Amino acid sequence: MWKRVVFLSALFIVSLLVRIVFWIHGYAKSLGWVVYDVSYYVDYSVLLISSFFSGKLEIVKSLVFHPLLGFYSTSASLLLFRGFLDVYSAGLISPIMFSALTCLVIYLIGESISGFRVGLVAWILASFDLYSIQFSTTFLDMPATFFSTLLMYLLVRYNHVVDFKRSLLTGVIAGLAVSSKHIVIPLVGLLLIFSIKNVRNLLLSLLSLMFTYILVNFVKFASLEYLELMFLSNVSGGGIGIPAIIYGPIEIGKLYTYPWYILTYLGLGYTGVGVAPYIIPLAALILFCYHKFSKNDTLFTDGYLYLIKWAALSLVPLILLPRNYWIPLSRFLGMNVESDVLTKFFYPYYYVITIPSYSVLAGYLFTRIVVKSSERSSYELTSVLMRSFECIATVFMLLSPLALAANTIYPFWDFLFTLIINVEKEEIILRVIGTQSMIIVIALLIFVFLLAIILNYRTYLSKLFKFSF
Image (cartoon, rainbow, N blue to C red; front, side):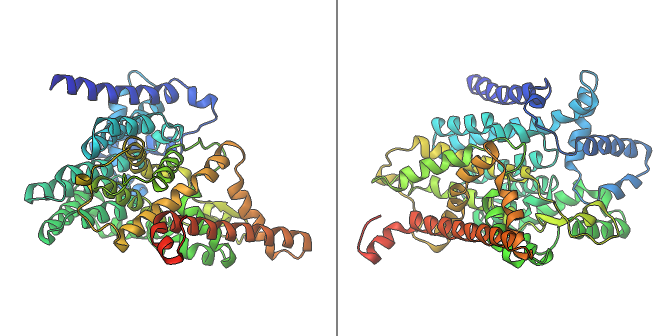
């Protein structure tokens, strides 16, 4: 037992030290990496704790958009490390700690699903991927990712057998995830729905989730004024509303950008200037394609179905995200003037929620070479739902080479959008450039979806068209 404790502690410490070297010792600065909104989260965490001690909770009005767990953990980090570090570095320890803990849980999930090697490879990918290290400093996304990953670990360990006590526990963990950031609501909700088969236990988990959320954010429920402010701020800030993948082009009045929007939210939204390469989905893609075109039945196991479901569901929060990628500059700055200038309102760190699932999936595909017939899945392998999960996850992986190029060679994806909107210009040259760019994006969209279908349905397509892929 003590050997396992030492081993798991070592995994956590290594992941933690890697992130501390980059962020606390300043190596990240030499790479041009920045922390998003560090002063906002740290300063307001200080004010929140002060308001609790003073009994004056008016500061809550400024924090109604986000849930409060990330602010609480940042406050605790400040109290613990302020004597050793400057205030902002002390605050950064909070998300960095959650990131390292997430890497540890990733190992445990891989180990539970398919043994030590799967867990170790998954841990290595999550711990040393530069994108993972860069966005280990997201104050709300990292605790949200940690608790949603911990929820998946509990569901894997329970193996669909969730009794009364386990229902309460899964609900509490899910509630802590939602209390970190609202973006994970679709993920944790669908994980519970697809994993807990007993309706009574499922309702118990959902009630436990809601109770935990209210308990963590109880100060927001102290008055109707706070509730109204919470609702209005989430509507205006892109927390509540129609998914931007559907409504985004309508909101900015450019319906012809739909193909660009679809590809962005399905897998190219984490590209941009100064964004580190995200290797994990590319590694998963290479291994996925290898196994799809190999002659063994590696993929058809319960472990694989767990992972492909998780990988697909981790994309659902991004697909359903109401926040529009582009908004008028006047709205971003809060000015009451009309402006045709669009500014980016979508940030690349949103995709950290995909790190755990694709790390374990890549680890599984890397280590699983031959599967005995006795390990075949007990589920229906050709079900529409599982194939749908597989296609969603495949599209994300297929876009990873383009995303890697955009983050290492040239940030062309946002630039491509600016080219596409030239179709509205009167100058013929600009209109031609815009049209050509739009055709490229449409062709890419068709190609990616067709390739995803071929990879996942090639057996059926081969029988249908009487030839092999």
